[in-house]
Amino acid sequence: MFKYFPSGDSAIIVKASDQISVEINNTIRRLLTRVEMESIPGITDFIPSYNELMICFNPSLTGFHKLLDIVRSLEPSIADIHLPPSTFKEVPVLYGGDTQESIGPDLEDVARFNKLSVDDVIQIHSSVTYLVYMLGFTPGFCYLGGMDSRIAMPRKKTPRLKIPEGSVGIADQQTGIYPIESPGGWQLIGQTPLKLFDPNRKPEFLFEIGDTLRFKPISETEFLRLSQEWQR
Amino acid sequence: MAEIIIEKGGMLTTIQDSGRHGYQRYGMPVSGAMDLQALQTANSLVGNSSGNLSHTGNNPGAAALEATLTGPEILFRGSCESASSDSFPQTSIDKYHPATLCTIIAITGADMQPCINGRPIEMYRPVKVNSGDRLTFTGLKNGCRTYIAFAGGLDVPMVMGSRSTYLRAKIGGLEGRALKAGDVIPLGSFTNLAGNNSSPKITGIIPDYQTNRPIRIISGPEIQRLDFEGIRTFLTTEYTVSANSDRMGLRLDGQPIHIKRAEGHDIISAGVSFGTIQLPGNGQPIILMADRQTTGGYARIANVLTEDLPIVAQLKPGDKINFASV
Image (tube, rainbow over all chains, first blue to last red; front, side, top):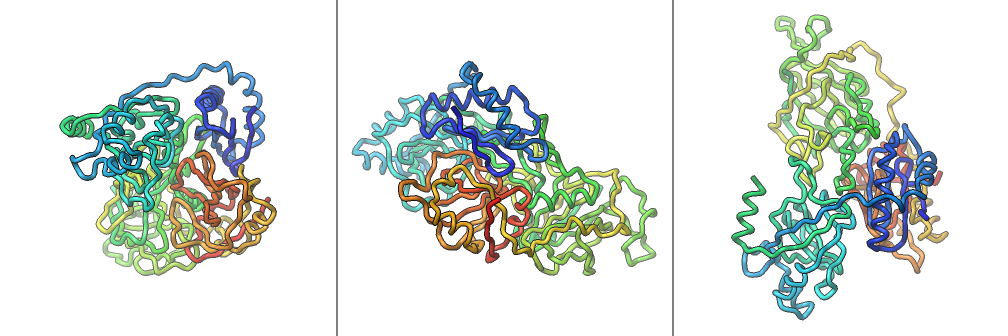
């Protein structure tokens, strides 16, 4: 069922498929839950993704072949594992337009590119429930599935050097939120006052693999109010 | 209370321990020292915990300084709490004002020719320093990154289980940034006086960064995307470390590695680890290092063996590297 690869001598990759699907992602979540239940000595970290689970380990405490045997022996029981609980959250977004210049500067381009009005783009983007397939790229960055292809647009040819924290963007068929200020090439359509990552808060991250979210358009007044409330 | 005062930051000096483990599923990079072996040796020499990773909890060990290419200048101030200073031979030249033992340091990794008060000191051994002493570096002789450990460790706040600086998210270390002139960092207290100026220099543990032997690799999950010619190129080319390299990864320049026509360079984003070698579309490999992202979208053609990572971590722009499969 799974394919196994070493990632050097400090991690093992368990690959479920070459495809992206909700079912495959659920299998990865079940596998993660099952392996965690074993509390295997020497495991130091997990990196679940669309179709793989990377299990990181301390090579002085365990090894590839040992873990290979353990995970293989768990394979038959994976299907019976209940999916771990996941949460749904609303993500308030101030979509771009004629408000602050730094907020959603590419919204009109996305509308023009897809021959839609700005309101159409906002309506389409905020009317779908998105699944968090995985996190990566930067702390708290969610790879979301479920975006409507009517608002898809390729990345910018020249990436921006600085994208503000909370920016909501589109890249091809994907949409996502930048949790920290970073460089990036996504088409920016709005900004959320929500802090996806805060090292001084518990929990530090708002989302994890398997969670769902929906974007909710808010006004500039609401954006400023929530920003103040959440930035303390 | 002992502390260090940074008088010059050097090119890139950050506070690092063994890293921030356990949060990679949230996209949080591990960070930590590039050359973990040098960090752990330095910590051991001054009697600090060098860390331990296990499923029951990850202890990142004591925090030390990682200096890149040029060293910082550091003034020591205050007194360590545990020891009475008269039981140690002092380095002070002023016999009328007996010196106050501030801390014990050990310097490992790249040789930047460390000096206390202008006098050369040996690396890879504990050295006592007094309040008022000044640590400087004459210049880089070999390697790329120097580690300076202090008895008791650097006493900065733990952020998510580690004191390591992660520059991109501005967390850990001192305000999540590189050190600069004027910074003051308190030292942790210590009771274990492992350091002794008369102890012999430890030679068995000093790695040879000048070695030209190939870096040993294990095949990665996407190695089959290379044809015979691609694998031959990968294993016979002498690559040059690019100036665009940083704590995230070493970018290599050399003969491009071709991928089979039917296969692309891209993969569905998935986990990467310390030493993963990625192959982006330009055919020039990237070795992922301490500040790597948790996941990547390029073919993972190989991984450097953990044992050889310290050699890779000590390469600087312009240095040569080649690979051998094990």
